[in-house]
Length: 455
Image 1: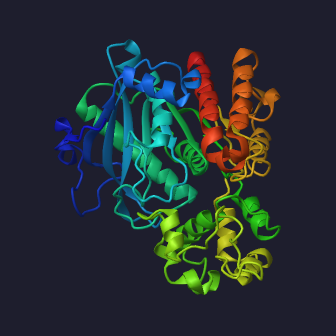
Image 2: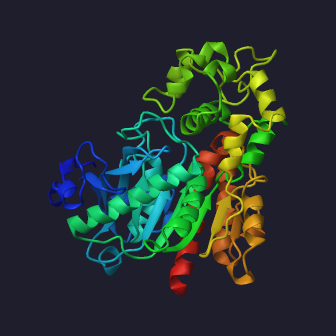
Image 3: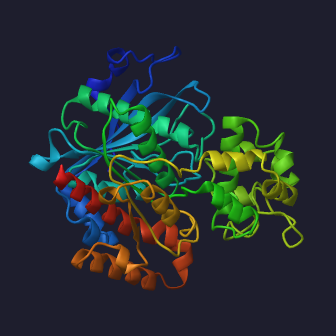
């Protein structure tokens, strides 16, 4: 399925775009290298969506898809030059829907502990979803892998750093446009849409904000559709630390956050021993993302043995092997100058006003990114400043009244409820990562199509 060969026209891209192929202070978005890494025909895509059960949501493929990987220059959170990579999924075929100037979906992926996570990889389940939903329908998908992943020069990941991740996304978009221009074929010059899931929902919202604020002369956002994102990090942090309502997977998300904010801002802790159980403190800061699996890390004693990656977030009498010291939790709750608390407040996305349409999607029973403090709060905040004709939408897969009217909304609601039934006793484990994404992605694609029809 993968074809590893150089993209000939791009071999000299670093010369064409002032790319310093090593060293220097290259402009943001400079292309360092680009290659085709795989392709799928419409028949292959249809066979895969039929086998997975996705096709009722995705529809049949209108285009084949060619996957490119582009390496580009960006900046780390402290403004220093760094390199990252992006997957670029390009429609192929003779149909008018698959060639020429194509609409672009800038896609932000969800949290991964795998340092090799690569959205150019056609075997990645998240890549397969956005490929079927967007690229196979005629959109060019630009899906940055983020700093810290897929061969990036940065040895850590700026997790949920709103400003830094937006910079990375925008530079990946610039590089993808330049690489495709050099290669010929479909061009990423049509309407620009932004979406992403989970971590990527936060990144998508932050990227829309930054593009509108800082790059309006270079890019025009047609619409954005963030999905299941932790937009309200300040309240999320309060709920977990003060009320100890801990979200599924918190044992992984917390060290990603602490490392990100410590390396970005420098004031989250004086040493890892201030925040972490001594059993983990010496290795935790460089632990995630990793080339080892989570189970391997647990087996090595680098993380607590916790099947849900939830209950052993805090060290206490019930869980002496818990990850985070209770003293650090209490400082978060009681000290307004706690560096972690201030970083969560700094990266909360409330308070900005979009000038192009926004729709969000999630499910109200999400155990990972709590719905009630995120999507409805973000929606209400936006709508408090938006005029009636620009009100942000909020799709809740558990609430039929929030979904589109008519047969489409009926089908989405019934399909999601049926998927939960079929999951049986695994609903909680599958809800955020498996059950919600295809239905929300279908709704956001429909929203984008409506916006396109009005342009």
